[in-house]
Length: 347
Image 1 (cartoon, rainbow, N blue to C red):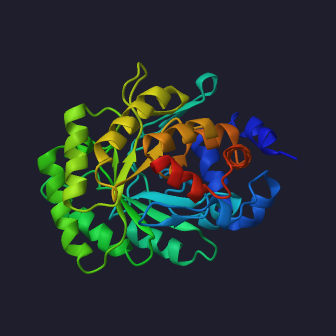
Image 2: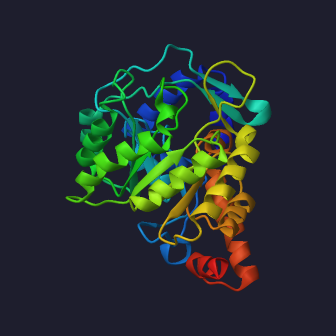
């Protein structure tokens, strides 16, 4: 029985941010609520995926922004995600932009947000992570505080990397949110190099998989620059993409079905730019809502995928549907595991 449509019916009558906060509180207090939803039951021997830097028991993870304060890792790990990426985390607690700052568009299965990294800060979020008992692969998405100067930004990212390196399975440099003034300006060769150099000193002491999350609104030159720097500083990969500002609404970034073509186009370009460096992985996020789209991404050279908006509109059953479609594809192609399928796609 799929109870998510009933949950969604009542949830979509409430303010988006208020119902999200209440849901996160419930998932925190009652992580076994995952049993109430249709969810995949997968075997890591069949469905696990490794990009050369980390391993997920299932190829679909929860994107950053959903569990901002690492409140419900237990729930999301058990509901079927191969990984959970928490944050975006800033060094100091931050209230974010004024409300309202989340808008749903059910007709297009899309969400607009102008949140501005509201979170409880590094100290509290680390404490929440350390209290977690059941988790899959854990990512921590790192961002700068709104009032941090550009001069101090590299050292702040380095601080956050060092602070979470012991508890995270991977970390993500987020310089692509459209809701923190000046943040996307860091997606230039010079600014990003400074960040990489600062973090690199910390990585010499404690090396963890490190990814860069980029915007879907970058031009080809900037994409190539970001990929080149990722190669130069031996980052683990690129996460493509964040939300888009290419819309006619008011402030904020748009995600969901609206971003499908935009994000897919950028992912394809990133995969092409990264192809010659096999150690550089590409993680796909943005408008993904079906196995067919994931398979197309794998054919382009991508690895893991993440979802956010489609999980809100479809619920945990989406993960079950992806698993079932993957099963059918494996059977049709004669593969006994996802890793076998991926080996074929790479060759």
